[in-house]
Length: 209
Image (tube, rainbow, N blue to C red):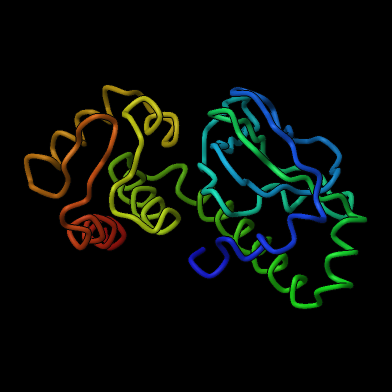
């Protein structure tokens, strides 16, 4: 993700600028694709509806990245995207994508790499759905650090619980455990990872079981 962030910025003039209010659906899982989007300002959460009808937040889109790439070329949206704050997005239709790639051939590789990353992320998330909660929390905390390029993650316990698909009480117990062990600090809705290697060890220990 480090190499993909803001890479699409030079092409924003090809897209349609959208100013959306908080809690606006950008696209819904299962809808026919009508292109993809770039997040210029604000925030967007990505959720996945399972076969049993349970909806789970699986990602928070960083500013400067694409979303809904699976909706390009008339594909079906695999997830649902909703704004978390008033946001500015840019919509790129299939026609706009073709114009960008014609005028800037290297843009095709940027789009393709972003699409591949999202597909891998989705597959990775699905593979962790049945893992122990502490394992999932460690995995997704490391993923958020990678995505946001920062060890201070602005996420409260309620949002983290939705991200993991568990209760806030369960998340709180593990966060308090990690605080006592000196792995993290948590205040004002921000998780600060103090010992990132110890969080990685949680994954290593559980994967070896």
